[in-house]
Each structure stands twice: as C-alpha cells, then as structure tokens.
Image (tube, rainbow, N blue to C red; front, side, top):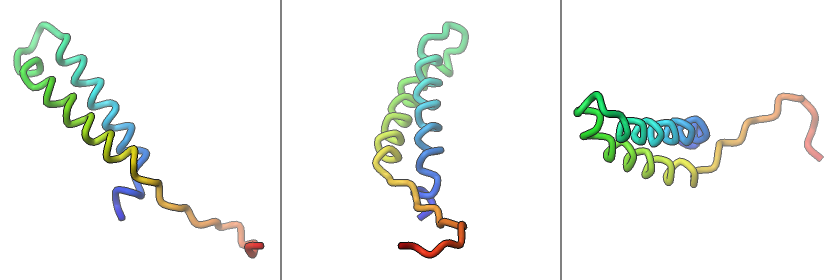
Length: 68
C-alpha cells in the first residue's frame, strides 16, 4: 500500500501542516490565512491520527545471508 510505504514522511508532513495552521492563526497580516487556519490545524490533526497508526512497510534485507 502506498500510504504505509511513506507513513513516516506523511506523519511529519501532517505535523508541519498543524504547525503552519498555528502560525497562520497567530499572524496579523493576511485575513485569508487567518480564516483557514483552523481548517489547516484540523486537517493536519486528522492526517496525523491516520498516519501515526500505520506501520511502515518492511524493507527487504539485501545482505544476501540466509535467515536463521
């Protein structure tokens, strides 16, 4: 599955999205960013909950040794 392969990267991206939402909520310059900041935080939170529960895909061992 695609998402389990990149679960760790998507988890970090969702944390960055939540952080971006907090910064957008606190900044005073753009009304557009302030208006959609809570939406960014919620989408990041939901994505974090999904991707933190996925286990990363197993990487095959290329050492060539037989398993014991």
